[in-house]
Image 1 (cartoon, one colour):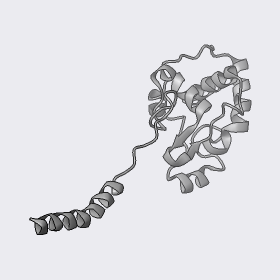
Image 2 (cartoon, helix red, strand yellow):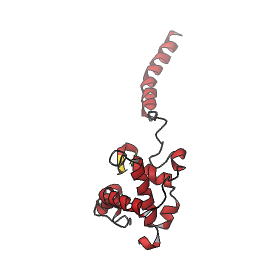
Image 3 (cartoon, one colour):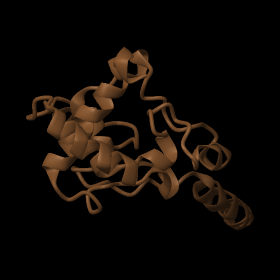
Image 4 (cartoon, one colour):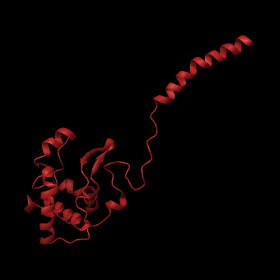
Length: 162
């Protein structure tokens, strides 16, 4: 009987490191995200997606937005929004894809005004903090200016703009 207990004890000692290693090899649970942050970098909260542009299209709003576009967006998205700006090739090499072609009606059809506003405001950040598109909340602090940019992005898909 004593021999049997000794054998079981030694067996447990031998197996316990294997069990511990097995438990450690599993992935640790992901840290909890703040409820305000989307789980996926491309996922936009429903409330943000549903936002509607409070501005109406006007020549003044489009001129203001064009100046913002030239300063902040043109280097990647290009002057006409085709995703062919001076930094587009570098973007493609680093990120694996070109900036979005915002003149494409199919791209535009899949974006609400709220989507565009969110992406301008919060940027597009992948897991691991890989910045696909920087956030402009600080560089363009006025919500009104960001909504004007949404008007401008919508204008890019119009045939006359191409």
